[in-house]
Amino acid sequence: MYIGVIAKRYAKALFDYAVEQGVERQVYEEVLQLISVYHATDELRQVLSDPLLPKEKKLAVLLEAAKLGTRAVSDVWHKFIALVLLHKREPLILFIAYSYVKLYRHVKHISMVHLTTATKLSTATGERLKRMVEEHSRHSSEVILEEHVDPDIIGGFIFQLDDHRLDASAKHEFEMIKNHFIDKNARIV
Image 1 (cartoon, rainbow, N blue to C red):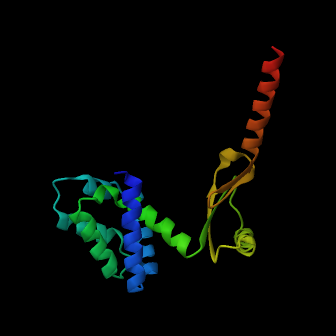
Image 2: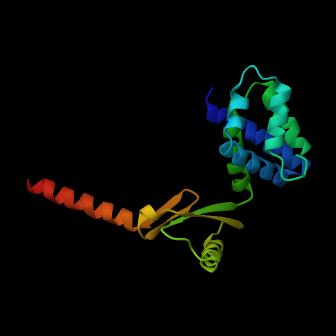
Image 3: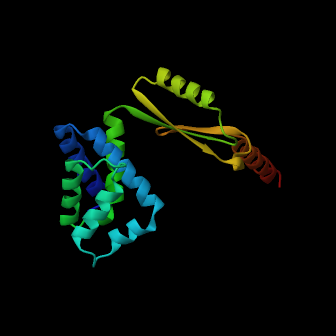
């Protein structure tokens, strides 16, 4: 069976159970925390990939990784992680987590905007852009703006809303001019 299919099934089951219990938002936050910790620490990846480590130890580590400050993790998340470990699906936990986030955002009509610029935007500009996207988006009730600074794009911006991307960077424009120039000169020779 494919990893994506398994991850989506587990994520859907987690989402349905969380909705039933009325804690889907808390589980969403716990999943985001787990993803953040997973990418920030090598130890978590090592723990999950160690076949000799007992399930109880892995359970404790995964619960701690998803913990938000001093608040205990939800009972739904605790039971879900125990189920994942019981079925030996811990290598898929990151895929399951991303599938849950995608499903949650889809159901709750949350759009992700990734904006890459050569220099940092002012807070006012970021807020204005976020409001514009919220006003023009028919399907989104909430917009999350993630800003990235990449001096390599030279100028302009790269705007991505969910699956739509607009690359208006100077680097992209220079590449297009270069490719056009190469194509024109190749025909002459």
